[in-house]
Length: 60
Image (cartoon, rainbow, N blue to C red; front, side, top):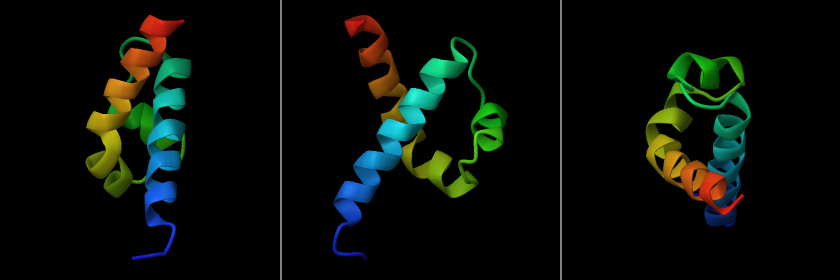
């Protein structure tokens, strides 16, 4: 594991959540793949990114 793996993980989740918000309702796995996220990133961080994207949308 990289020394800053925690920071990289948080950044990737935030990046994915922002991509989900930019795509909007109905964002799919294929949409995220087209945005450059790997299958592994989607599997690992998708749920957390979805929760963050929802919280960000409610706060806006």
